[in-house]
Image (cartoon, rainbow, N blue to C red; front, top):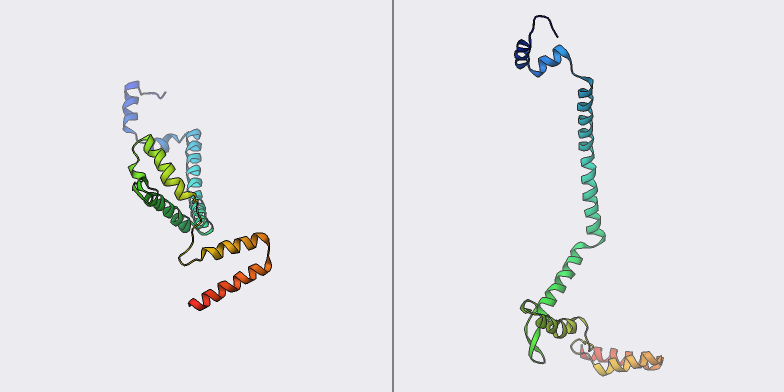
Length: 169
């Protein structure tokens, strides 16, 4: 306590002094300075790690796009969704005409009918599907020859197929 100051004068003097004058006249406590410097160092280190973090994220995204073929995967996913939405029909009035789709499912019964008559037949084909103009009897004969391992029958069917394609073109 200084001589010549009472508590009221001291309080008035402290109210008028700013932080810069206080630091110049009395100094900064060492603990406060250390805490401030540690905080500044920590913030600086955090800022220096940001570019490397961004580089890691960008390189990961680039590797995923190039190695996993993200655009192709997205195209296949979209094709599957579109196929299910447009072709998985139910509520058939004839063997080939279904009037309701996935978006028309309103109840448990509709869901199970859609699953049984719409989705399962779409995903698990029960009959082989052939392209237009395919001679099914040749395909059946070729399959039987392959199963039996008869090399001469396979050669004859292959030659007949070649002859058929050259005469039609």
